[in-house]
Image 1 (spheres, rainbow, N blue to C red):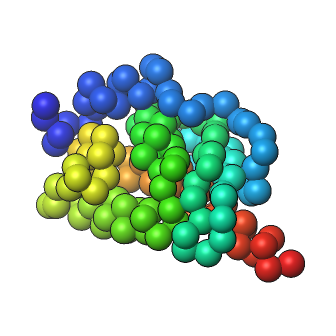
Image 2 (tube, rainbow, N blue to C red):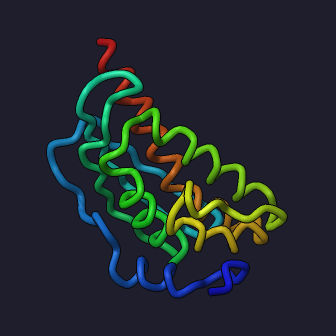
Length: 152
């Protein structure tokens, strides 16, 4: 598989048959992000079990519209993060961000980001980086919202 190309079979598969799509309840936080560059949008809901860094992602559901890269990224991300703790997700999200901002000079570690490695070909196209990272930014915003709501 050529991971340097923009659209891989994995991207097409997640775009055609998205995992965890559709907004579900219960949820602790809901966020809506828009990528004005190409019109991508995502509404993401996050449900955690537990507290602090050991809180586990019990559910991550979303409704995504836009390009194949953004929809595939949401599907891959949801599948990768559900069931993991916040502490386990931090290095995954950090690695994804690092690879996507490396402009194609760095390849993703499949052991860390799983199928998301198929999205790293987009790193060579600055406008596409936003498409891929939009769902990841939405997750981080929802996580922050759950923490803020939990402090009330």
